[in-house]
Image (cartoon, rainbow, N blue to C red; front, side, top):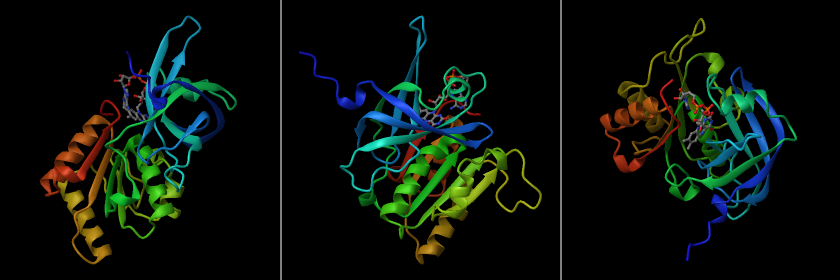
Length: 256
Ligand SMILES: Cc1cc2nc3c(=O)[nH]c(=O)nc-3n(C[C@H](O)[C@H](O)[C@H](O)COP(=O)(O)OP(=O)(O)OC[C@H]3O[C@@H](n4cnc5c(N)ncnc54)[C@H](O)[C@@H]3O)c2cc1C
């Protein structure tokens, strides 16, 4: 007999409650779930679109919002932040067609290794490239809710200052140390990094975490973004001596 499909893998409807513009190419969609469920920071939902002729397209989107503070509580709503890939199939639909009140098909929460729960502790070194900041936002927001004293440092690589998603929240309310690298263009007077991620940058970040804690402590590392970014980040972490067992990765797709 075929085992029943677990609830998280069964499609459900979700209503778009709100849409917020994050950057010129990123929007956040707050979805009200018809079947609320608990989730862990770092997990994602799948979204399935069906055209009138029956053609279907399915993509994964990480949850940007933090889980409810109590792990067993179900989340009625989730935030998904979608970055526009201009020649893409699904992300332009989100940006150009989806309106508040629309009903979408989703399933989840999905994902195991790229998650953080308070028992896992820290310190945390979070590495995000482009829209890879989305699940990292959930992790940072959850940490701020349940373990604000836990040292955390985010290194966020984006093309330009206008590409930084959640900038106001990161700079003013997230509670972690933030380092940016702008790889394509930097505003006048920019004092952050201006290159692709490399071992020297990570060594700086690990040193800064140690200074904040007052001792050297091996960080738990999370790297998320385009495939090339994640591979470079993981190699650089290994090169500076972080053990493989302390590195968790999530690849979103091709290198931009
Ligand atoms: C676990 C997981 C979580 C994800 N979470 C998010 C998220 O929170 N926010 C988000 O915006 N995206 C996220 N993605 C990526 C997302 O699933 C889609 O791949 C992305 O939106 C592009 O889909 P599309 O249909 O618009 O483009 P497609 O039609 O799939 O592709 C169009 C073109 O863009 C290229 N491409 C595809 N994906 C990417 C990418 N990520 N970066 C650059 N080029 C790409 C393709 O190679 C192709 O040339 C996640 C992916 C995974 C696997």
